[in-house]
Length: 134
Image (tube, rainbow, N blue to C red; front, side, top):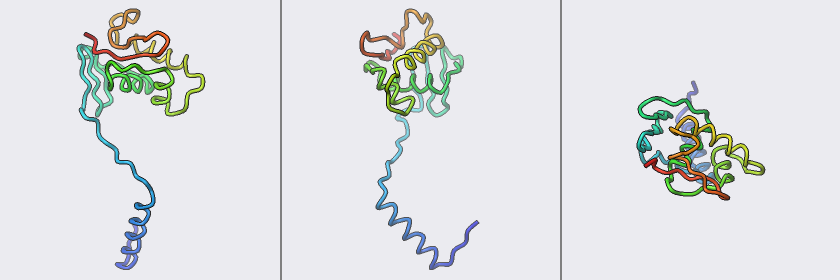
């Protein structure tokens, strides 16, 4: 535990205020909703849980990241490079197989029939999009 005299405390506060003015800080916005809900699928963002028909589904960090990224913008088409950069947090160079494998594994876990997916659709020649499952 640190203790400061009044003079030292004021000096520290001034230093912090000066640094705050010089360093651009980005406000972190909480998710708009604590959950993303679709027919038969619920993503509880604050709990980092995915439920399929009310049953918990275990997802890896990459599977969960890809699902949240796609489900946050239903209907929007994302390239494999966009998914890779968002989920892996690095630039994509040869990301094609990594994204394909994660999507394949994710479909096996959340889709009733992974060969005929209702949530994660392939957009040929481009990438993937999330649909509401209806």
